[in-house]
Picture (cartoon, rainbow, N blue to C red):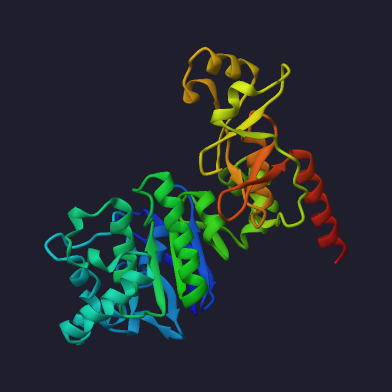
Length: 369
């Protein structure tokens, strides 16, 4: 367990970065520090491995005051992942990953062998081991950074805005990867971000920091969204926090409606009325886009499929959340979200009204319990 007890960090110019922070991070949990720039979240995290020393207060790890532990020894037992990976450009991937085990006295040969297994664990092809960081994509570099942090199997992992420099698609993949790894490894993770969506997706508990380094609220994500402690937290979480909160409600049992869908080759044979929508599928049967009567006419006049269809919105899988279901329904021009199975095949459609009815039922069940 990591425990902050009345921790304050004040710089010589009078700037207070962290103000009287008292907080416990339970062992084996993923806790997120979130807040605007300059609110003390990164400073707080970096005090755990003594990269920053507190001005006052006590910070303990597993009951030991970190100020009494040798800083180098402390850091070798704590994994650290930073933005843009921070890999050493002159070392191959395998040697980047093996860095900490070698520093701890493990033979380079043994550390490299173990590094290959860690690369696989974070979803990287071991054949990348002999490449240099500059030869990898941004997402691959971040995975290497996570692998390096995990290589010595530390009980604690610190992650300082690790995914902020990659594009949204890669970022979502990396978030999913961290959740998968945490479900397997149960490390004690402190994750810093300025993105509230990332915070509520990843965190088992979320600490919201405010200006002046003051902790505003420390709560489970669902409660943070439904019961912000004050106006500052409510403003940071955003006016659409009710929509975000749908991710904590399951979509199992949501009714699926019939969706009319055709292959591209069948578009010219369609009979449609104004206001109708039909889903066009790819040759492999997966959904492509929606088409209306105007699109059919354009297609018959020689327009390409891309020009005559409208993007189909996000897809929904029945094992997902009510947020995903509602997003699929709202982003579809037809007002019906496309539901697909594990193979990406169309199995029906979801409607917003059904999502709201399911939300009400689940709320009632929780309240009754």
